[in-house]
Image (spheres, rainbow, N blue to C red):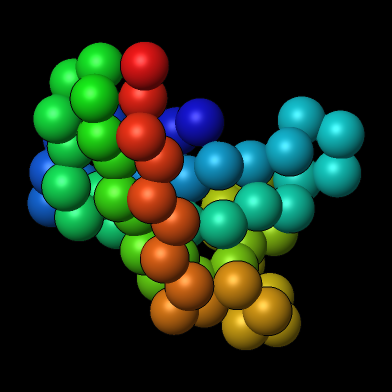
Amino acid sequence: MVGELVAGNEVQFISAENGYGVTSLVEKLIPNEYLAIRQSANTKASGTQLQEKEWTGGTEIFELA
């Protein structure tokens, strides 16, 4: 992960193996309880180039315990 998990920030989740990943907007974060992120771009080459929009626009919600 590149970036800081703070509501309103963009973070990148990049694979150490192949450099592909996703750039996401942290929509809501309640520490140790809830995380909502929206994918804003797929990335490659450690986040420096856009790739196909396979994940773009998707939202993930995690309830943390």
